[in-house]
Length: 175
Image (cartoon, rainbow, N blue to C red; front, top):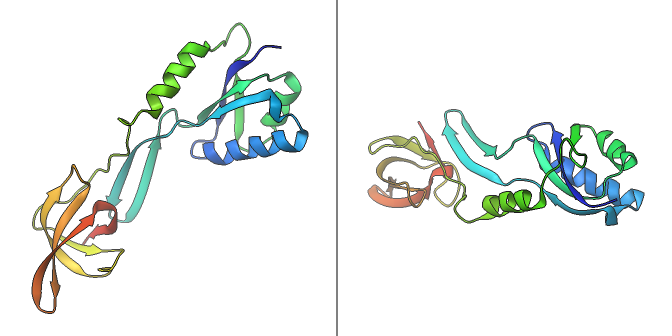
């Protein structure tokens, strides 16, 4: 049997957890040599919302990851038994994934251009609370927004004086 690329459809958001379960299953069954690569697409961007405080990560091809190897029907059935796995596609004539196409996709997803990009909702004059770091729980006023750095300059009152402090978007909450 030749090695092929397979797409594993899983519950969205559980891609990495199910990948680990697949790797554990392969080790337990002693069939690790049948799978050469398992690729979970990296996060596309991070959206940061501050009311209420939460962080959401969106993924490329959410709900899928790729496996390269020799998957016979027994291995497919074992993987499908893992909670969260919906379907395995590939390897047959109908759903064949060309290696060149998948390798190109993986290299495109792995390039530096696709860095997490925080979205922000801060404007000059906004009142914010610092949630982490040495100034945690301090309240200040946004003086300057630096989207290219992912930071905000906040004026915080320290010992009665307005002091500028540079804080990352993720450590601020609008009030």
